[in-house]
Length: 390
Image 1 (spheres, helix red, strand yellow):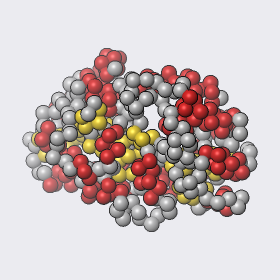
Image 2 (cartoon, one colour):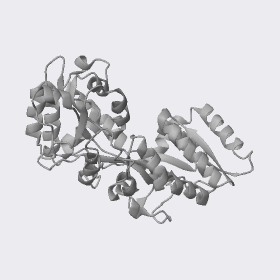
Image 3 (cartoon, rainbow, N blue to C red):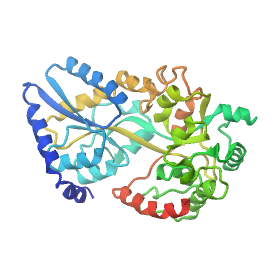
Image 4 (cartoon, rainbow, N blue to C red):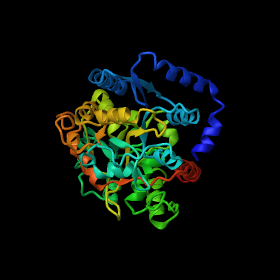
């Protein structure tokens, strides 16, 4: 899979020349240079850069060349591997990790001197392929239900709690829907957002052993059809034409959604822009309980790195409690470190009031089963689900 993408991307030779220039320049200082690649918003990069500067101050013999790639990240990482200019340290997520792990371009970090007991076991599972740990996790990503408390209060509805079921969830969504002004629940066609409906019925896209596509199995179809019916049968979720070009987050901020299924990454935005009271709740229970996919992001080490011990030192520094706390304080992430997740930086007294839900969901979530060709499977399924959802 990686080889196919690499062959295609080699036509973009200009990027190779730019990358080559970058790697040549890194020797000018006379220090040992470590190249670190990551995506991230401006606010995230603003947190990261001082951390990298502090690392250089503590290690004056090392220089960090930070490659910020905000768009088409993995396409460019493919190309860097193809041109033998791969970064030493690569920020990566579990959805793409199998491609690189299977291609043999990442180092196994299972036996590094980083204390793995400090991380949620499921975050480590998400970063593991064929029994080998290929990245040290920074954060976990799971889904919760954001809800507009003002809309609930206006309709004299009790707020969601951890015991609510799919039936209760549907009844609440129906009660809170006032088309075309307000819809009970969000609707997004990306698999991330319908997977909780499938998993909570015992289904999914891939089997846990990755050997079988299970989208057509009974349990998966039950969850998928319930999700489609939210839009097409019960009319509690907006059609494409009703949301127009607005995102679900924008509709929530416009108070056109009573509930919104999404992740921790929206907390800073909602803290800043929401002019109403809001909180979060766990996903409702299906026949298999309340199960949402757990994804993770973290730092991997390129096998081609000529400075592995120094690169490991950087990964160890980035994954320390001190620096994970700094990322946590922004509100952007659910930290993969257990101590940071249970710190005052996560429970900072700001919204959401029920922030602990994010940590409770970690316990009940399931690392997304991902294969080397998971992206291809997703593309194929998208053609199928588009017909069901519209």
